[in-house]
Length: 570
Image 1 (cartoon, helix red, strand yellow):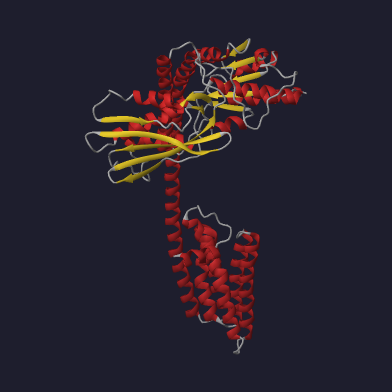
Image 2 (image 1 turned 180 degrees about the vertical axis):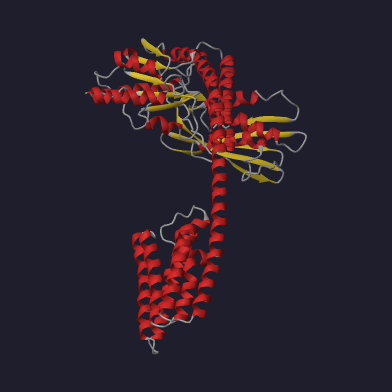
């Protein structure tokens, strides 16, 4: 099979290997005709030169050399072009007539029988049959003129007609099959597009209210809550984030699209407290399991990272363990320790030991709905550059993974996350230039058609900025942009009248026409499937945030874009 593929690849020149096999046959056949046929004719011509058929020998040698040279020329060009088709066809016709003229009617008749096959394969059935009929008529008439035996001419002509009918019938049937196959592929592609569009819309509709839950939850989490209320709020946020991950995984399973990963936040927290609070959510819920935590006094409790993401990982993973248990009651023991320490980072190794041999098929979990929570945990861990591993020790199943955390600079405060505490974006230096536009004084344009979403974004940043204008669609945003100077535009994508992509393109065109400095535009959208971010940036936007978003991330991007804009202006 490998040798066969090598031969086919050698004979083909520049043909797309993804096309239908019958489309590739044309190039393969021409390759065989030019190489094998050309060499065979050349050798036969050399053999005839040793006899008294010198004229026929010269004709065959010239034809063989032309065929081989056509193949070499096609290899240099990288494809078989019309020149190769026409030259091969004309050379074969002249060879037949030349052999007739030199009196070698047997060989001429043999090539005349092959002629319909060659022309039909090179020029398809209709044009090939026309060329074949013309050639057969020329062969018969020229043969009579040269007084070639009529029986020989009739036999070869009839054989050529039979070959022509068979080849044309074969080609016609295969053309119909190719056409039917193309229609099926087109129908399948349309169905896939409709399905992907439905999943995209479903993801969008789910993400929008989830964004409101997350943003309001974060705002509430920044208020004066006691520790119990804060733990409840973090659990709500972790659950909302898990629901987003469920939507992502469902979308990736039933469509051809991937998912855009979001970067975790980075705040100071107590690791022991987060793990304890997570375990408490399962305590007393059922008698089918016991969950315990083995604290490690050598591992620092106070770290910098994303406590909500840690809750997500353990909530989903423990839930997957409970759902897939095989015995009546299991014990789940969670332990952790520092595996590696650098000047700025702790790599904390986590281990979950389960008193049951669980059947986790890690290679074929795509169609297993029971593995959904495991997939979520695995993806969250993978976002940090690590991998969730599963090993077995007799009747125990052991889950192992490592997460990196920064060394905390200070103890966590009662209000852990502040909207004003911004994490620097890598690659963009913070600006201390007095000419930079301060976020507090920035003029913001929010482009959003949903009234609830408008209120959510305004609530998120109203304490940080003084002036926020609102446009209900892209056209309204364009009108406001033409009359008012804005420092930043927050752009939704799916809107009536004019969507965010069109509005961004129009704004960029206006800036080019007026020769003004581009206004930073941030996409805030529930379009979060693979390709959506690239689509937004390609339209001219500067940044992209998918819903549900963290207020700190939005503020960070706004500050950095203002700093970059200041450097451009000055």
